[in-house]
Length: 284
Image 1 (tube, rainbow, N blue to C red):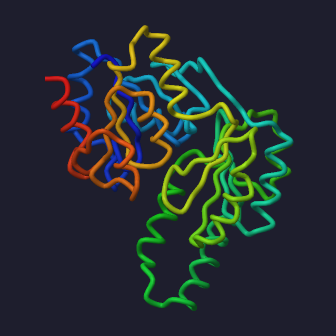
Image 2 (image 1 turned 90 degrees about the vertical axis):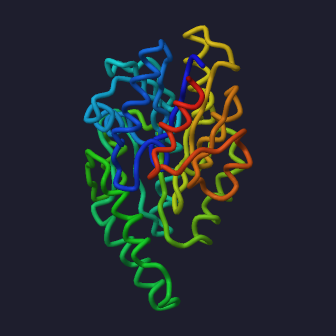
């Protein structure tokens, strides 16, 4: 094994958004053997970098589902952005249909200043229609979105478009499955875009050339590492592109239904230090 690509949410991170001491130890042990460890996440780079730094780790970071690659020093070495025209059209749709949304740029996450209100409206509607729904899980999912940092809240999407930023990922969040599916179907056939799901209740839209798999492949090529020497670990559908280019693909024990069928093997759950378990198993 010469390169290990690791997802964050639901994989490296516990349900408390922490990297466990067991996972930290395993990653450092792998690095001490000369293995390149790469974080590959749907999160923005600055958000992922803080989590990595706080854990005392130093790794390359693939962020925004593969739209950007940063080296261990935080220098951006590749970025693939969405055009402003596509950004405006997609955000217009999100707003017209009452979606909570996020826009990933180089330095911040843009989000509507009424974001919590939008999600609370959906929760209230579900309470009326289905009083037995798991509202604790819904509120936890919402808070997980707001746990990222830093945010810049805007009154209108036009405030975003007035910036000179590049836009890497447009994320839509909803508790209504039919609403998400309708939006997905609207953009699924667009040849200039890539759609994926980085978590339950969300979907992400990026440039057509963006995927975690493409980014991991680029780094493997840069490092001169063959496919059979790459291991990818993840739990969600945005990790499947990594599975396809890796010699060893590993789904977490807590994977979303349908993901483990895309992987060669499974490991323990994220709250059971599944990353540490499989790294130790495959590198000793």
